[in-house]
Length: 469
Image (cartoon, rainbow, N blue to C red):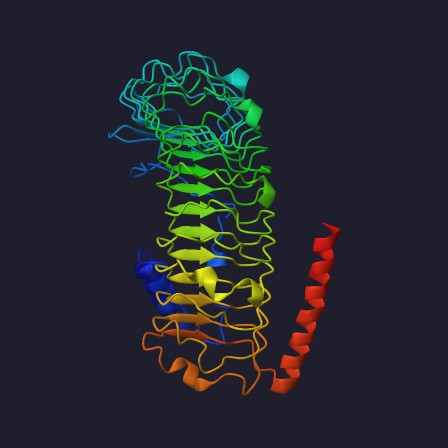
């Protein structure tokens, strides 16, 4: 049965999120693990790995032209990975096009080590002990066919100089890199992917001309560094920019003024506050489709959000209200995540959703709602309200949202008799209704009165807090 479910999930994987949830949620039933909401699919610590992997050669005894303990194939694949190498292997076949040296103990690459490997296309050196001193300016220079270079998980403190002009993908993550100089990357005009996450970069360590002229560079990972602001001189053609898990406190007017082609921007888990987001910060991002500001210190939605965005994530902030007009004109918005804030019903009036005519997924889980929000868009298909304080589902709760396919009300304050069955009769497309973790068999009117009293007390506390500010 477990294998059957695994196969089913694999078959469903390429489909859209809503379809996956609709099939997956009922299958687990009450007795299994809790159903996952979108906010649990965070950008995990294990980043996506970009790799080119031909069929591995079978490891066997050393043959003529193949280094000892390595495995070589007639197709030019040489695998010397994970064999405790402390020195660079000799006798590499001249026709080598794929060389794996990862997971060893190499501290340096001797001069001329790659001088005869003009056909080398992929080089894997990750998880060694390589240092700046262990590489010179000509280490990789003669690799005129090299497209893929992985130097991640070493001991480098700067981006190596003399990298091949032919590179398309460069892995430098999980080092101790503190600087990117002006001229180390600019000669690599074919570069498309640059992965610099999990280093020790500060904004001043990235030269303003570090990315100049890199017209093909479309994916840049800078997350898990020590950036205190958005670096200047970002690649003009970048489409995917990951700057999450840094120390950025604000977004200036011109931070993204030249990145016209940006489609995905992730600024989550920084220290951004609402007053430090300039209202014109996103004015040039007319192609932006996904914006993630989760895990910051926002009290209100920042002004000037890009109207063309399809996915907006502002999870786990300190939102207490949606500023009037903050979502105005966002007719293209498909998914809105407000999970894990401090929102109450009075902050989510019907006017908040007026312009969201294309919204299909709304996640307000983990807030302080006591009622199901009213005036939601008719286009809505998935509504996440779990982990709130909702005490009742009245008959007209979903009259405005007839296209709902999934409703998630798990772990609220619903009691027996507080859910009107007719509320769901008009939902002809409903596939998932999750109300587990409710029904404490209390007195409905008493529970509702208690919740109202708690809300009044919390309102007073918030007002006092605002006055102190």
